[in-house]
Length: 159
Image 1 (tube, rainbow, N blue to C red):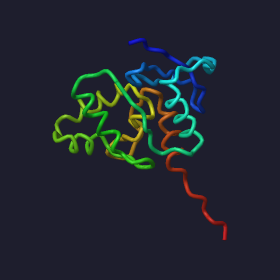
Image 2 (tube, rainbow, N blue to C red; image 1 turned 90 degrees about the vertical axis):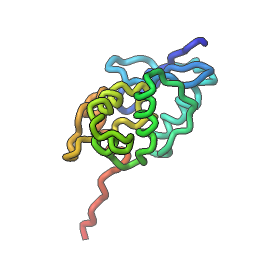
Image 3 (cartoon, helix red, strand yellow; image 1 turned 90 degrees about the horizontal axis):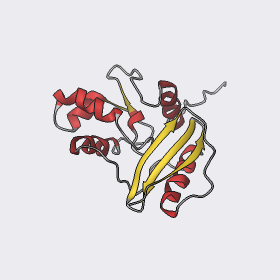
Image 4 (cartoon, rainbow, N blue to C red; image 1 turned 30 degrees about the vertical axis):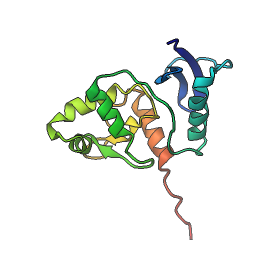
């Protein structure tokens, strides 16, 4: 299995997208600038196209073949994250309840933080029980941007 990594400029920085014929294994946001890749393997084209659609506001759900590496527990958490609808949020407490163990809140938070598929597995939709923006591997400014992108404030009428 030969993995390839390509780069895509996004409104939040450069995304590094890694995968193989077996599926998408990682999408991460970089703090360093990289030039957008021109030679993109066919197996990574759907990820590139769907991320572009997401950022342009045309896509709310991803339909990609993924192959993230992690423990069985981490994979269960990541699968549960995929059930959080676009434009909504949940808390770590609610997520741990959904997974059947309220005491696993720290383990759920740790698995959330190790999510290898930025945006596609929407870990940015998990917030603190008090509504606060809690830790985010990509930086809180990016989490805030993503949540506002998915749920923009409505324009109030002047009249």
